[in-house]
Image 1: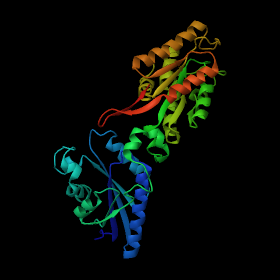
Image 2: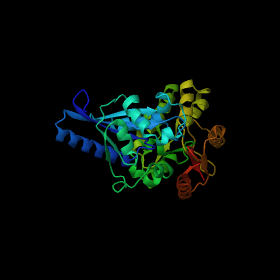
Image 3: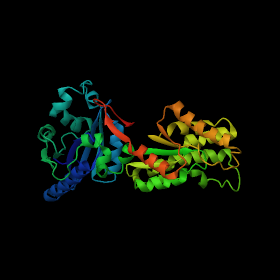
Image 4: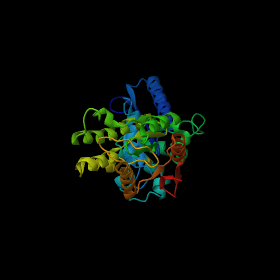
Length: 365
């Protein structure tokens, strides 16, 4: 029952909510077993089809889970990733995803593979690690193969990973980490200790950091910044943080952001251009740590000629965060050790909680 290319065909269907290394193990085992079956039967090759099942209204969007699978497995020429999103509607069965057809009808799940994903009667083997394997395999006209049903090899589940991602961080593939990584921005007026704090926090949490990007664009000792400089700085803050998220160890620490760059622009050149405004609204952090200028010694610069002006900029930053309702803590001590301890405590207080079915959020407490 091979396909037109003479290849053996294997199928597995997973929610991947979220994708974790238990799924990776199952895919690699399935691929290895299918490869051996192809060798034993003298087939021209083999293809393992992963169907990512999802529907509207789930905790993690189905499109994102499909992208995770594509990034994790899509480079393998023997693996094909399909999106099984909103399969009830696609197959003409309505949209009751809490009903028996979606939760218990294995013939329906056979149709997802054979009709929705177009595999027809070519499926040779159906792989999985749950009790549904026999039923869906029968519906596909395939042989069932169960893999690690007792979770002996990988003791982890999607529920555990959703509810306690930071406790099982090592079980996330790199593609998934940006979704769960906490993003922390250290913000404040110049000469308030942001750079030292970022460096020390990154060491404390053994994670990556994003330094202030302005130093990569212009040297304030040589010239004043231009409008073009600030637009480039805002862009760099966005793309650098995004580029490093997969390398983060649960949290990423960033020195400044697009919002702070926008406030600089508005201070120097009045109204910021639309691109900077857009970036300042796109780049959101789970926690802002504001290094307050209060109780600190003022240093005159090209931008700030008086302590009052300097302190006022701190209030501008605080006002912008409050206006947007973004979570922040203020470090108002002039003692470096105390500021550092307070920042560490604020980051440690970020927690994951679930609130009822299909709803979850991070909260600070």
